[in-house]
Image (cartoon, rainbow, N blue to C red; front, side, top):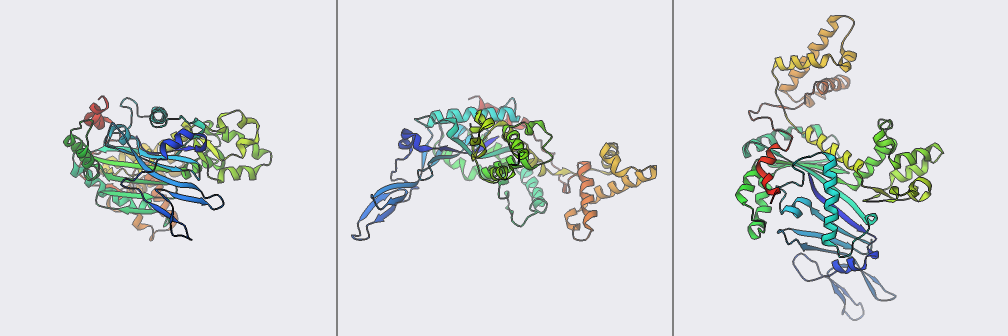
Length: 453
């Protein structure tokens, strides 16, 4: 479930031994050499493998960025890191399943419970183990920032051909999801990707990617003794969904759920959060500008922040801080958003007219449709059913987005709402392949044995 993770150790200057552990430039593949030259003599002032600030009054050098990798003994995987003394942090950027298993054909997920709570607990436990294994000096949780997290899901099909056919149908959702010209949507034979300012979402055929990348590396070094043909066969049946949440999306969640969203104001899960409670009080006492300043500015999301201490309840420190806690409530929102996006890209099978009629009858009895469709006379209800049936049938035979420029705006969006009320996507398929499941049943069949090794 968890894929790429970007962890930053902030206030690095507090951790002398940690700095020395990772600032060790050496000549090796992938590094860049920069030379600084004395203008008067033409001699090298310093040859290094990092960008460097030069203090001309003292000739003291301060490295700006040092990028390198660290080999993980249990697999072929290389752990990438960036040491940035000028901004006082050490950053690790890596794929959790590749770090743990050496390949992300396997998923970092519990075989017994794939819910948000267990997933979050596994994440925290992993971070603790990661820090213990890779840091000679253990930083405080107050200095560990989660800068990015990717969630993923491997959806299994009966064959590679079925997976690729389904991906072709998903390409039809391009128009539906790329609403803004500022958002970039790219589509290829074996992948599609949707990017916004705060997050990105992609679907790709895992077998193609595995053969191109991980398999080649495993052929060079396979310390776990994987049977590569088995992994390749499993990957060929998989479409992989990945969603990248950057820190800017964390900021967006904080503002929407704890401050500006009226929809969430009555939800106890959010209005009782320390940040929501504190700024509700601030605004009630005329501190609107202070609240807006906090929510509009980028923050560091740490494993523990000032909001976890009593000072958050009584003093100005928390109000003026630029940090928040990467807690379960935040993670659960990301988790829910990811699965919503996965569901957005599921292609519904075409329903016959009897199935459509039965679904309309069922939905017609709900309170929502009673209010919008049923009139005092039964004939009004019949007209409503006819309209729904006509819209549903039309959606099966063409992309309704193509009608947008020909219909009144109100009529077009009423049609889309009708379909949403019926649980029918505007994109259907006529594929003969079985409808793929959105659970981990097939994953367990193919790959559970590797979790026990």
